[in-house]
Image (cartoon, rainbow over all chains, first blue to last red; front, side, top):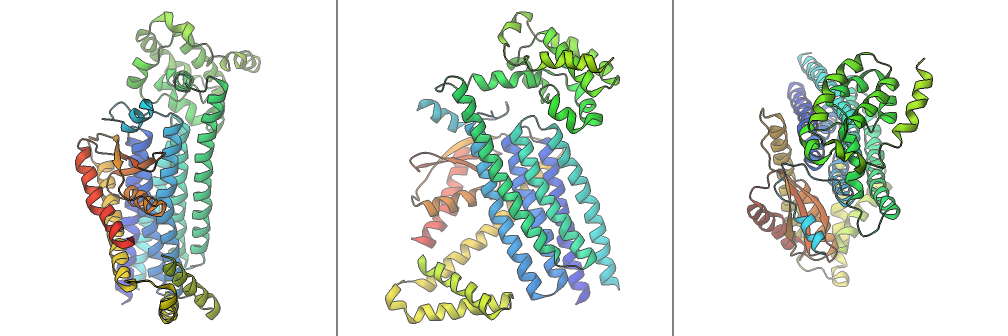
Length: 113
Length: 218
Length: 157
């Protein structure tokens, strides 16, 4: 039982840290603001959330698990909101997409108005 | 015993990987060509620190750290929302200064000198001078992609030399001259010299700073 | 909808009063409050209450599945040696029209593979979505319309 718990904890910790690492690599490699937001808001969020759950499972206590799950839900539900706000703010203040972007229907519709 | 060693091993590996992640993200904060880039990286730093706290909670056994992680997540979320408001409001003020119907031509004009600096000088300015160089010579050292900058940002050779000279004095690194000088002809090659007049506003903050830097250097 | 909010509030109050913040106690408080609300069902009249719980749970399950998939795909994309992405913003015509549903849909879109909601138009009819792979925007539009939007309509209509 102990070994099972330890294995689950180890799996969560390692996969969480690898997700966070991939997010940081994406943050440095992606060409523009909006693509970087993908990396930070998805892979980064999932990485830290997995590590939070690992604490709850490692403790093997329902109260602590409930608390870590509360933190998990809070973090997962707020990350898209902040990413969306940032994307909206930076698009509205005119930061352009990178040159390799295929299309920008939002800009076109604003120009028509 | 083995269960404990498995946990310890995974937590140690996780700490190493998360540390590398942290450094990579800090690199984006320093380098990030625009303000939103830095805000994204800061937002992700909060997440990484939450991961750190979780790992330390496993390692030490103090599960009270979870509450700290949750409250840190709250603060980080509020900070990101506040930064988004700030980005929006900064644009609005820029629109009020110029002509309200056309804020578009103003922003690219303000951004062009950022891309003018030579990419070779970036590690120099970011390395020794750190945050100071970021704050003071921020307009100069943020060359994102030279390919991208070439068609969009025409700049004369004198502008490039001014920018790099001011930066060298701020950083007080002699190596920067060596790094910057071979790249200047490249910048000059791409650019028609007649375009110097189009950049009226951006160099102004650099010019008054130049004599001040001269006073310091001897 | 208000019934659910009341149910959750009652469960939280139950946990606060009993003073033991465990998951089990929260679930028990949820059941107790659901029973209490069931007694007064004639007053608040919520037809298909339990049927909807199943649909909301399936929405939650879909959410976590998509979250895991999207994180995995972005991670693979970031770590792959040659970066071939075609980012772009496409417009998505909204069928749902209530503010709550639009918010939920925008959040879910942000957590699907390779898409990130950027803005809603003034009249709340169009959602602008940034996609990492925008080579085929019609397929992406169809995916969202047949996946999340349909689920949301099922759960809250």
